[in-house]
Image 1 (cartoon, protein in one colour):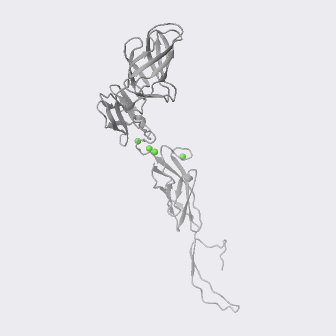
Image 2 (cartoon, protein in one colour; image 1 turned 90 degrees about the horizontal axis):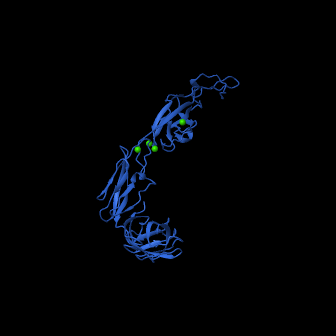
Image 3 (tube, protein in one colour; image 1 turned 30 degrees about the horizontal axis):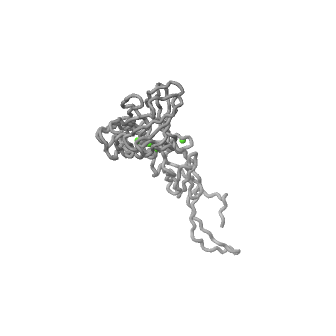
Amino acid sequence: MTLAATSSIAAGAHTLTAKHGDAACNQSAASTALTITVDTTAPVITSAATASFTENGTGTAYTETVTDASTVTHSLSGSDASKFNINSSTGAVTFASAPNFESPQDVDANNIYDIVVTATDAAGNVGLTKGVAITVTNANEDPVTSGKPLANKTVVVNQAFSYNTSTGFTDPDAGSILTCSATGLPAGFTINPTRGVLSGTAASTFAATSITVTANDGSLSSSQSFTLEAVNGLIISSISHSTTTVKGGTALSFTVTMSENVTVTTTGGNPILTLSVNGQSVTATYSSGNGTSAPTFTATAPATGDGNAASVSAITIPGTSSIKDSATSAKNLLTTVMVEEHHGAGDSQYRHAGPDA
Ligand SMILES: [Ca+2]
Ligand SMILES: [Ca+2]
Ligand SMILES: [Ca+2]
Ligand SMILES: [Ca+2]
């Protein structure tokens, strides 16, 4: 027996039996009863049209609930549906990957993810769809140090040092104010809690010391460490030139006497002394003396203004070049210089102002 789609049977449960008759109208006994249920009622969604979910989570963000007499299958569509999965049996909606409040991935990037849920019952009745807005809310997160390492530093005895350690931290949460603190600080050094500037002056040398800086956003904190060591400065004790009377066009050779042997690297170009020769500026280029304490620099005296007075006003060390002492072999300590004493023509004393920043 076939029940056609147009068979007019009311919704609900029906019990059917059949008898078979022959040509003489003899009827068999009634068959075993067949119970069928006609279902014309679509599922009705009872869950809310909104939900909120805290960033970084991976649990259930929303559960579609329905009323229906049969088992239903849940499904998902809508503009932000690709960011979610739905459990077709339970209706649980989860983010495909944990949402980040600071980096919304919904189509209009406002942290409100718009999806449409629906349900289909066992008889194939499809319920009305329901738009659901899932709002991702902010969570406070740790200050971030990734990709922002604090560099190891060298200070020179008796020279002021300052290092902004706040560059090692960012907080992903808008409006966060970080407070910095440090442990392991050598004597003479402090850190400014609001700006993160670590500063001080070493009274004597000390070996590389680990300093841990902590940035706190008011409830969460992150830390990272770097080392600080203090070394004696490389001192230029005197500068002498080859002749006390210079004439225009004369070749000059200056010998720079250092406090210890130095390694001179010229990969970025020769270090240069800027000299004042009888009031005129002259540049003298590094010539020789690598590995000694008395490197030499050469120059040509200006065409006019003969005289016998020469002094150094600056030492320039190009980019990847360096003049290094043995104690600080990894550092370029002569990036800047300052005059410490001046003894007269061709005889000046300098002390470098500090290591590379
Ligand atoms: Ca975040
Ligand atoms: Ca949105
Ligand atoms: Ca956050
Ligand atoms: Ca934070």
